[in-house]
Image (cartoon, rainbow, N blue to C red; front, side, top):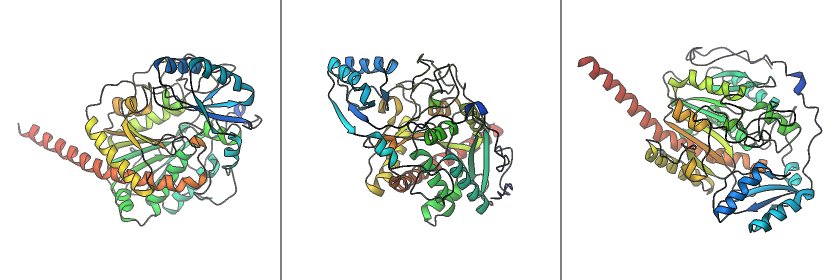
Length: 442
């Protein structure tokens, strides 16, 4: 496919880094996928709910040395469900742990591999639809096709390469000059396939929908959307290990990858010293090329970006800063009000209920996350993270038939959010103009 990389009249290279979308970098030859595909037959997912401080403490200790158990959630607060995946061979470890600490456990998934088989990804050679999950090559080809068709309004972006040499690709959608900007990222955690799928659905709707409300936000905002900011991990989750979460840079001889959402440079704390941990933040802020490229791009384009959105799964939560502290941000009431309005709009589509709050209160304290960096370091006033469907029935193994419903309701919530933030951004813009005039007078 020949890709049109013409810069539209309303685009400038000062705003965004534009690279030749037909050129693929050579992958790091030492990191190709020669691994045997991992399967999860006879693996079950259990639910535990801590009710005491001792139980939450015990879970934190187990996370540091999981003994072959695989944590799927990392929110250790009283009354909040924790999901752990266990093989048949390691079940005795979970049994001993739950008895010792007084947990009641229940099976929520009886065979993990059955769920994985139901969402087999398409890697190459099939027409793109929103009824299936796709590998990285198919996603990028689909994005290129959109650029080719809608070249007057869409610019193809490459912000840099991953550790293994894969391009980190996105698009800018812009119908006119001087629009406030919305930045959307997805795919930070490799196994959360619904996040990239939702980002792609939104790209498609912004370009093709005739719906009046969708057209309004498409034409009155500039959208920077990056569906897969951890391409190495995402591809590894398709090719080798469906449950892979992190990036793919080797850390030690036996440990690979960093939790990309805990690698950002705002109040950075290296609070996890286990290099193999699912939530290992890396040796220092922006140690991973993926997070550094992302932060650098947003920083370069900060003057255009008023809204930052980050897609994850699962839990059905809409959250805003801060994660690193329980202290409220200065515009907490505004962010909460906008979040509640967005959640109500989301619910109006299919009845899906989302909780709303700041990260520290809604789940628990989280250091080094992108949301805090974008708000606290770069000063983007409206920052939210979506924990998409579901509430744990299938978790990050969400069936592909839920892609379109998830996309529709998420887009409805963004429309409601932008109707509110658009007013706020315009008021702030006008206030600054007035202040400048007054400064000139006096």
